[in-house]
Image (cartoon, rainbow, N blue to C red):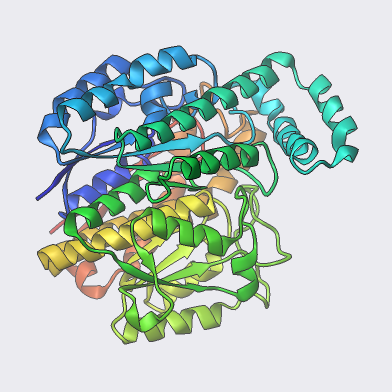
Length: 513
């Protein structure tokens, strides 16, 4: 069995726990650094310990998947601020060159984030000006790239309104991170890296990121390395994507995927926080994961159903908004009957639920559960951005398909699959779609705090979240296949807010006999 080392983006469940789970399935042997040395919400990764860990595991593995943002800056949130300049970052990432020189046989994939078009909400001042900087980036792009001179006056007003220390740090971090992305392309060209994913963090159809994207893609073309670099929407899920790619590389296989969409108009929409139509994002994520899109479902190893946004409906970005459309244009009957038909034909089917950002579509999940379809799916995801969801869903699908082909231990794989699918329900459906908005509304009114930073109220809010989620776990268990429900005693082993905010939850399900 091949052995793969992953340096995650940070210590959130989506970055650390998901890949840890996929590694336990048996397609590869996976190792990650101790979670306590990886960067978190308010602290950076321990650079010296991470470098030592990389040097220790490098001679023992066949492949490495590296988050450059964790290594260079200390994590995703530190990547948006200027605690480390380019010179310091260069001195840190030199360890990758050292590993390449000492262990030329090791396959090295890397991911680096193309910075989002606003600031990080690291304190109350930065939270206050998040929307203004987002708008600034859009106007800057419209003026300088699209030559829309009529926005110049509004752009100037924003420059005056945003505190100079906020705007300058944002622009300096953008420039440093862009230089890092250019350097990573050099590292592809000189053979330091074998594949590079440059993932576009939260963005929109216009913004400063588009000029950066163009210069990156132009450099890839100039250096004639177009098969080894991909720029596409995403961030937190990318090490999962590269793990799926590496598994296929080692197995010398390419999983064939046929996408189906909730609606024709939906696949042409630009999802919230992204810069291109849904269909283009889907193709990019399948390609980044090393799989191939096929035009005939009969050729496919997997049918990927994409529950798309609904044209003209609310985007559901506000956590307190109901995560349901209740629209006649949201044709869930077609969706469910088509899924059921493909399952009856023996097809592997997965659902990427991107209709709302950072939450399940409540209407869809209710149907999947009541029709006893959910646990027959190969994968399901519905968290954060469309790119995040697509990356997790596609990666889980690829890795589980190849694991079953390799090991053939269906019962063991089914139990692991049920655990992860229960965790997805508890996270994306129970917490994000139902509980989080309720908790945020309550703590704002009762505790006078915001869900983006719980200050000294973490213990109280964390306890509240646990209590709110308990009834949902009983519902989740009731929908498990009868054999799994009767054979195992399922319990909610971990239920906590991993960071001092309400944006995400950490859920771990375990079983007894």
